[in-house]
Length: 144
Image (cartoon, rainbow, N blue to C red; front, side, top):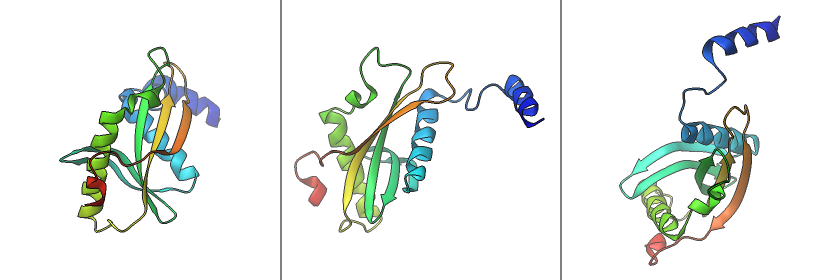
């Protein structure tokens, strides 16, 4: 009975997440994945003057700034390859702003990258998690 109802609903409304942009679905999948690992998500799509932080999580006592990159395939490169030096500098500035705004400059922090590959028509993506993917980038502003 449950399977029949689910099939009817899926036919009516489309697959789960249908209609949402790929990037949004990727961020939601990354958040679910991190929660299963025990992370606590404290901010999602946090827009700050220096840039946007996809996810901000807490892992133990560490503030984790998570950049999520989602692609349908690896044809044009792996999703994580898009986190280049310029992106790392922007993320660092945004992270500093977040830490300052919340009085967390003394807290341990790190940058993770979650690469989501979600081929069209597939129900579930492939997720790769790179902990401590890069160090704070820039001219020392992370510590000011």
